[in-house]
Length: 440
Image (cartoon, rainbow, N blue to C red; front, side):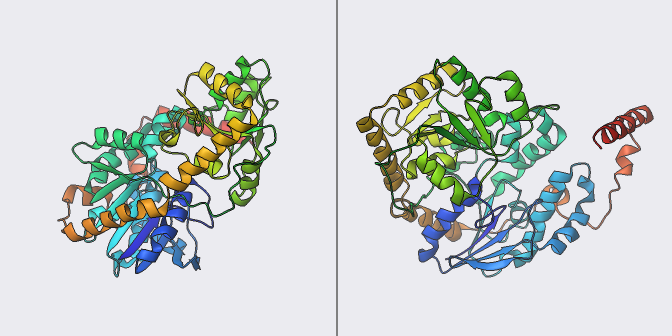
């Protein structure tokens, strides 16, 4: 079997959830495949890199090809993020020579890499659902919504069902998409996670909790601050991750420092992001990890904690919570129930040594058994074979082709601006200039 992966990120250059997923997954199925290649790119990521990574050929989207395709999507100049991602998707399609030499193509919904493959449907295509731009916009502040979010959602609703198979590794996400894309069915396969380092279920931890996530609304920093505020003697929590916008005026960190002055920066210590290899020893030293997300498609930091012998407190709205048995291999609680979160933190900090190590060992066993390549590989590979054997090329949908294909025709943004009231444009220009001068 020859598989081509079209990805928005991949190790060793990125340590996000998609990279983490495919790092483990590709290495697990590689021995049973004749050929695996990866093309990495998006509206944000281009490079001239090409290399072999653990026996897999990896190449990045070429910047000159990306720029060539960007010019073919001037009709989306009003939505530059969308334009750049769809242009990157088509550029990777060309760079891959339309999948020549491969039996099946796998893309992700995030980054829109699937679009050209379902429009020019000459190869079987699997789209794996990791957490789409449309979904993320539902849980962000309106600063990230508006027309851009609507464009992503409409595109996902229209084009995702054209994939030969849709797969996700979260039961909650499967339920969401089954309802959203009905009658199209979404398959659920647990992620493969291989523990490559010595396990340490009987470590002597340091006395702090740890969150490894961006500081943004749906990652739960507000709920965590509120929970610690309820506690008489809250433990020290380290939060490692990039500060993100909270609203039009505040970053999340600035908002939390104002709203919870005795907690954020004092009981919860924010720290800048670190490379994966530097985070792992901190996860091993931590007494417990916390996944306080009010929504998360999955959340691989939870698996990282469990694999490092560190018990976890996990919000039920994070997809990974399906693996947590409350009181056995960790604790879980309803995401917006700050009292329940505070109780979980208190219980975790009061565990005796025997109970603590028993919980840590149970977490390790969860990863080693439920997420092992030996257990999951047969199902994954059989699914690929089934999709390949049943594939029949589809005719091009002319509406979709017109909307989502590159075009040599230019659509100057002035044609849109000409339709706007002059007063609105003048007010905008005044405010834009004022903002620019104030921030110089």
